[in-house]
Length: 185
Image (cartoon, rainbow, N blue to C red; front, side, top):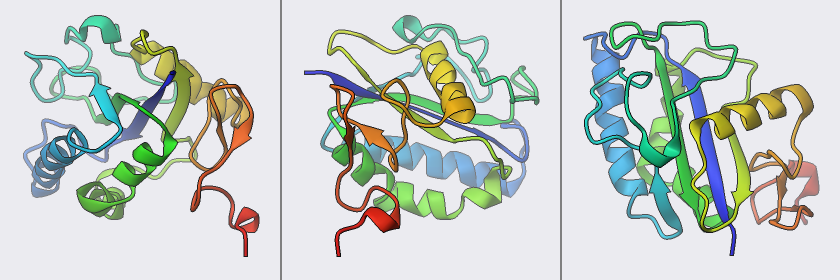
């Protein structure tokens, strides 16, 4: 059974090393989000390092998840002092568990605060794709697929919650996911 890969990306208003209260709030909520999502039904794994400190994304050893990469439109720093981004790469059993984890609980609370921390952007902030159950996606996979959505929109190769696809490439949606005009009345 294939697994669902999820890559998320956002550009922060200030570097991760910034000692300001909003940056500290972002870190505190982020820790709670990862703890909660890691216990969510349908969650399988996420990219992490054992030894990386705040902002050291580019220098860290991510193991099987590959070298850290960002979309071409990211124009801020790449050092521990200047990095101003939040990115995640995770594996799920399916769309419904991922949707439930993202849009409920502590992660939903964080989403409600996203404009406090993140720059507004015309770029997509997440992408899904299906991988065989023995494959670990890489950061570069996520970046390539996010850029694909930006340039071409959703397709079986790279899609969003709203315009999603089943593992066989057929369009699919689950209740509460999809354009409002598609909802059954």
